[in-house]
Image (cartoon, rainbow, N blue to C red; front, side, top):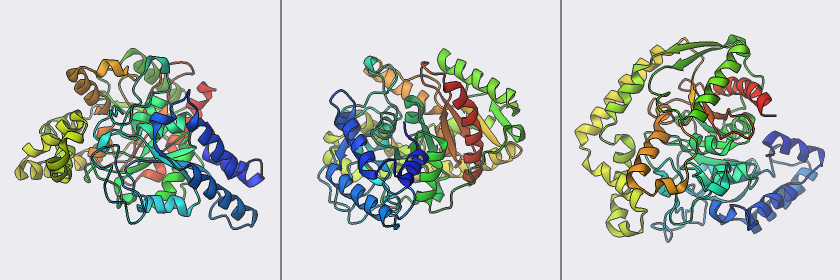
Length: 449
């Protein structure tokens, strides 16, 4: 995988052109032996070539809009693009009215000169961590692809596009782990920002209380760059924070339950690497994690807020939904206004308590997902589908509920099943979290070379 920085340097030096980068990505998408047909629901081949040529001309004239101009990017299928419907991976919105304007995050990547190569496949309406889509097919995770394993969701296509070189970076959304889960399953980096930093206008919602827009890319630096663009903020300092200055909280409860052997082995090995590098690891219990399960027992924000948005569409097009997604959305109908109010109050209290408990730590460290990607065939049974979906979402959903930033880094050794290391920072602590993640990436990357 080529990083954003490597691409920018090659463009600046004249070693490559935007047109060449775009053609490489389009060739990967079109390869009949690859996952392009399942990864993209729409490919902007002609528009991408035209924009790439324009970026090359601007760079030659010294008028490039940014040093990242001309770099290919993939867009999840729930961002508004002017003149197109926003189907969100569903047949129910295939004939929706076209968007009248770009979503602000799309406008910002275009203004920086990134070249969209297409709209990527996703879990319908972003309502699952598995990445399965019965309408467009399910892109296969890169690891053991012949075994047909799930990519993770809901930003499934974006993760596979980056991992397979169909795009340099991509935009996803994250309501309960939808950037970080597919990143962990595809061996790339996925970032969930503090939600309020990035505008959600023009993004088809799942649960506005939890939704966020984040990048996926080959490296921490790639995600930091795209995050700066879509948030309208300056890039964080590129210098990593020395590991010898870090105090890391390792939860002993909840997030380590049910780890499979491959993930557990990768996590233990990673902790040993961090400790040898000088980080201070402090194992603690975090009761707020366990309590969050109880307060979300009636479906939480996702079910209630998704139902509020979908109820009118369901009344006329329920038969066009993925039945499993439809069932999860319909659960929100049973939540009363009093239940919803209680949920808001409980969340506010738990956030305050967690903030106090972790104030002395630089970040919380845990496995991103407790298991490696299961085979698609294992999910045919409804009970297994629901069990595995909840298990996959368990750790990542904490960052959304507690309104924090979080990042997933690959932490497995070359050739091993994919495993992600998740770092959860403080609310609005995004810039610091990127620097911490960069320090850990340097340690983890050395074992993967």
